[in-house]
Image 1 (cartoon, rainbow, N blue to C red):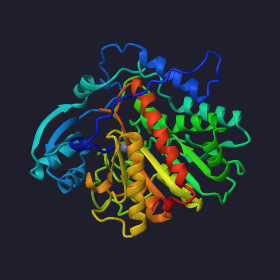
Image 2: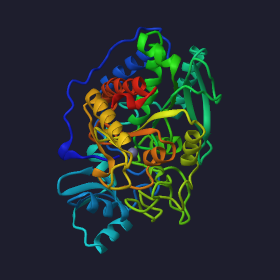
Image 3: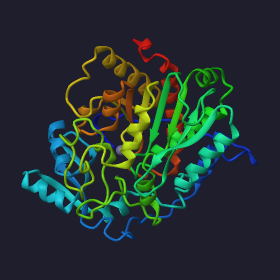
Image 4: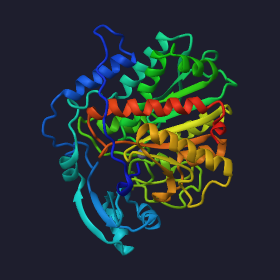
Length: 432
Ligand SMILES: [Zn+2]
């Protein structure tokens, strides 16, 4: 995630829909939304989480605030292994291992404060699982996708796009009135991907409920048209191993990466630093234990390879969103370079589309590298390698575990933006 506090936009008027009748089917959008709203009403007990039930998970990890005045200073902190979470005018905050802290002091960075992750977690987090039971874990997500496809066999299908490090399937729901499963289609394609960073669970909910919404509203005039003319792919959980690890003890682990075992026995590669776009040149760490570890080489990880191969095999893809949290931002390339994309039409299309989707969500549109430069980014790679117009959405929230009450409003706003993107997927340049 990337967070730009001093220009973030206040979001107001979150809508908590309370639709849903008893007996409605489990996979319908209305039913899912009503479950979320009910769950959000559950009183959260005082929290004390991530008190390290997984041995070693937060051992020697800190929440730190470090002085940094611009995107280049922030890039150097990423390279020292710091995982930047919040950006303020003169300083940033985020996670750092003991090793990263050592790197920071050897580079003369000014560390303004630091607290162990367990203390930070106890201070800011919401409860799990009672209060956050509305979030869908891997099995629930898988079951829902299969139910949605079973209920709409004429237009929807589910297939695995590949396996993770631990052997889980990465599931894709496809909506197409003609082609099913992996059968090619020449219709223009849109691809929505969620949750490649483990702890960003809201980034699973948004594409999952988008799928439910599109299928429930399949007879609305506009959506009916998109379903008959487009090829729509939705992969809500791109890093199921990490997402499961983050919740499996019942205490959030603030875990970001996949579940690779590294050469030094540390755990995980940052999937959003592992793509082959200026791989590991800036804003990423070569230290395996760090949260921004880029991996031993580009596409060293099964999850990033699966996403690469999926996109390369579908030349019809025109538009793409990868969902992350949290910052209320819509980012477009480049993230790995200060420059604008060289193609003037593409640049204008990025600005225009991000601006329109910004109006629908209340999120701020901007070029990704204006935050900091981070290479190996999935959307940079997707745009450069396939030409797809690729956006990173940093969803709303004030921390990684914003509670269930945030889901309904975030989903409502982001469905509008996702449908807007469908409306231009036939020819994204028609907006110019
Ligand atoms: Zn992220």
